[in-house]
Image 1 (cartoon, rainbow, N blue to C red):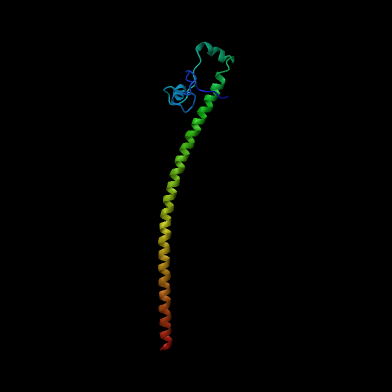
Image 2: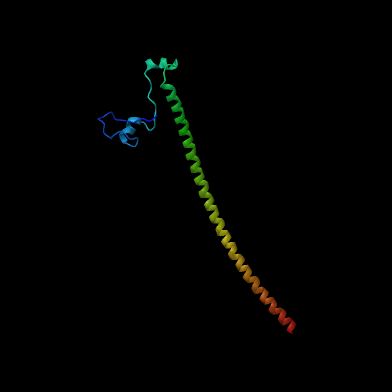
Amino acid sequence: GRFKISNGGGGGQRGNSINDPTAEHYLFGNRKSYAPPRLNREYDDDVENGEGTLTAPLTETEERMRNSEHLLRETQALCAESEQIGAATLETMGRQREQIERSSGFLQESLQNTEQARQIMKEMAYRAFKN
């Protein structure tokens, strides 16, 4: 279900939002990530005997959080790798574009030379028949 995080003080708005720094301190304290509170030792026996209802969901939630964090790290690594591959691909495509542009220039020059040679051959043939 849903719950509000309260700083325990007199009904004001402060501490009722997840984005509130006070709420963050309430949840995490000085830790960088969430760690569920430990039950008192006197209750541990009850939990192990299946009488506790709080620990099973916490353990399941804790495991889900670990799995989620692991998946998130894997996803971030894949994104970074994809970014590197994309950058390398763009660089390769840029080089290939330059090669194609150079080749196109060489082709145009070759076509001009061929046309010039054709004109020279025509003129030579005309002169040969004329004489």
